[in-house]
Amino acid sequence: MLKIFYNFLIILFYIPYIFLIFFRRLIKKEHQTKYKEKVFINNFKRPEGFLFWFHVASIGEFKSILPIIDFYLKQNIKNNFLITTVTLSSFNELEKKYGSNNRIIHQFLPYDFKFLVNNFFKNWKPDIASFVDSEIWPNFILKIKEEEIPLILLNARITKKSFLRWKTVKTLSNKIFGSFSLCISSSKDTSDYLNILGAKNIKFFGNIKFCSAVENKTKETEQFKSITNKKTWCAVSTHANEEDLCGKAHSIAKKSQGDILTIIIPRHIDRVDQIISQISELGLNVVSHKSNKKKLSNIDIYVVDTFGESKKFYKLATTVFLGGSIIKRGGQNPLEAARYGAKILHGPNTDNFKDVYKLLKKLNVSKKIITPNQLASSIIFNKNKKTGSKIKNIGEKILKKTIKELDNLINN
Image (cartoon, rainbow, N blue to C red; front, side):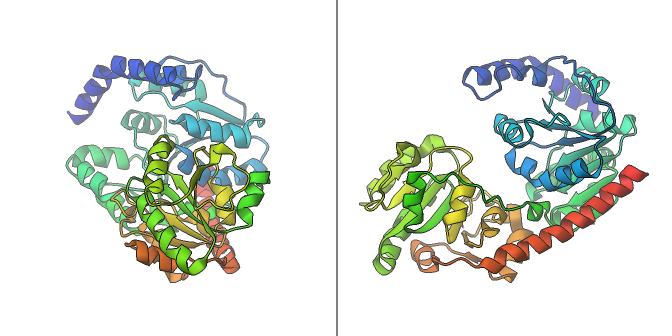
């Protein structure tokens, strides 16, 4: 009954979804030609050899599977990869990483409508499928089971809110989560939730986001060199009110630390004008990254208003505050910044990465703050070089165990 109701809703919203995709294309939030892959029948030529299919929603999930893709790329030249994504930004990131590699193919995930799902499998016939993080699409999952394709829920993340929703439809949840051949969980809480929801063969090795490697390539512009000459700390993925907290902390820290630079990378760059206006009211000098100002001698706050620049600033910053944690957004992934040896500061709301923060706290890398005074007094201006190697070692162990489980499915 629930399956019938779900498919009724899928049919009902199909036409509105097409209009939504068209509108998003007009405002350049969808690819100008590939948007069709989400809503219409498509024809693709499947490559010969073994085909891995990984589905990721956006950039974070895509980056988390790179070590796995790179491992199997090197393992056998007959291994090919289909990567499906939802967001335009994740496609752009994939193009940047694998654009010239003809063994990596991209398609935007089609709408979960049965005739589109059937068309997808007619084209691709994958040998193994992995859904990453919290991506659950019932018609795709049931079709994979029908085709007897091994299916993995990789780095599975089920929030308490999502778990409670699934729990109310236990018959459907048992059918959906029981379809996975293997669930590799990102946390102990998720393992418990999956067990209750009907999943089998659940493993927990740690979050695979520990496995990502440090990227040291940065473009050394004159503007960037000007930043390196200052004592610098960074606030990343900030939301409304968190920029104000960082501005006040800067004013406090400046009294004892002297000439410092606070870099703010907001979660949504369309808020940049509002952020600059708000921080300027604190009597601080603010400049945006796009302004390309080369001399920053009198600048207090540097607001990054471009995409994909975080790693460049992680390399510089000795302390990083992760946003979405003062407000109730569950926090952001701290591992990328921690790999560069930065001290990690966060608010009380970190439910999305509870196990990760627990481990970072154990390594004496992270600290919880609430007030501007606490933030200001916790900022340091020296890196811990041992942190990155510790995280790398943890990641290598997680990757090794994950690959072993995937090999077991492939070989069987």
